[in-house]
Image 1: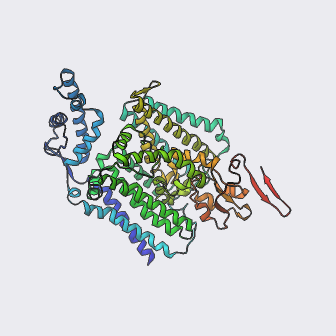
Image 2: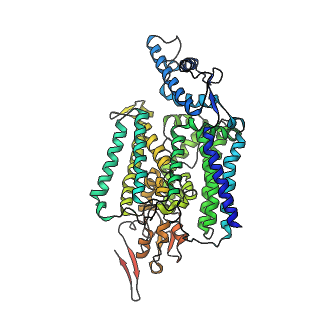
Image 3: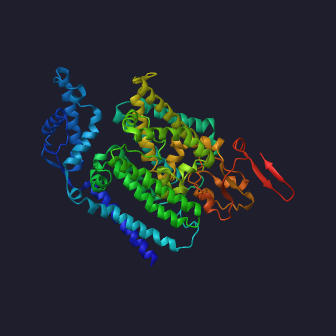
Length: 596
């Protein structure tokens, strides 16, 4: 009976996913003078004239055919206004109220696509919400809830045999990873028409690879991964491709997902009073996934109180602080603000537009600005000193919340090899350094008004960081690669805030995972389930405390240990020296030895 309910739930989820995907092709676009939606008369008339010349005005087109034509119309209008501005600009009109700057392109494109769309989704948004989100939630819960009737505890029931969760062999992983990285950087070149920063990125990738393979000799002493599956997980590949494609559309082509955005428009209007955007769609979807998959976490780890409380925490902070409270603030004519987001993860916190919005929003806006700065300077080091990085990465962070819930089935795919760890150290601290440099340049521009520093344009640096790290790394690779490289790819290799936490945790934090090596039976559960790529068994066998900077203190290694070998502790006895040397305590019948 339980199996039948689960299969039915899985069927509902698949139907919802098919409808969700098929929605992208529903309906048509028809641009007219009445629905263009652009208030600037100069821009409006120029785009309408270009659209008429291209034959798309008052003509019904599919979404796929319409968007490229509108892009062409906007570009053509921009060039025409530029040429006209060289001759004359109407008296009393600001130059950029007349000329059409490139920064307006995406805004106008989204506006025109939204206003000209018509079809079943626009006519029945809540019906499609039920057919997608509703069926997916119902199906997911029907699949998950019967698990509560099984016996509690962790069982290795085929995770390396399941075609969705077993991961990829090394060569297949590289075929997935390398083209994605190259594709993102090449797309950035065409997007910004700038060869310098893509070239710098390629040079840095090559430099890190040389350092890992030759300076640290990983080519000689490290296997490609700790446990390579016999067969490649084909369902995992499909899931990874789907997630990657979703993030590409979300970040860089939101006009193509206008039907998805239109579907959640009534919900957005009821919360904030504004029409939905791609970011509202993402926030709503994110919160629903964390809640539903959080229920799955409860069923899987219900034998462990720490895991239950931690899961409730990430569900609460994502739903309340990252989604509902910011939307309600907008309804109250206050700035959208996520009180739990911290620089440098919140990399645009010090951007000029954000500072100006907060400082011009009265006392609450000033409080938000001060709150963010206090979190960076005092909140992070104090909380990390007492509790380690787990207080944020495993209990509060939205990225961590998604990784711990939706990403939990893929946690065993994190590479435990020494080579991966060496890459991790270079890359994540490199991103932290890049975030510091970028933010310093942004603040320099804000306080001085000068846009150039040491020959570099601060706007270009800001744009490339946002594109490559804020979108490409954290979204496309960070989440899209869950089925390929494990659920904490972003947290492990790219998050600058995690790097900041990690430096404090390793050298000045009370938190550590202690081990009782005499009880270890070398089953390997701890290493298998470590999402951060730590070979926990190596430490457990030696009776050595785990103080790795990358550890997020999720505690799953302790939860899956059948012998109670691992324990999460906060102690200050040797806080200044615990990371200096590799130490292990060995207890024999006659004495106790500290091995260094």
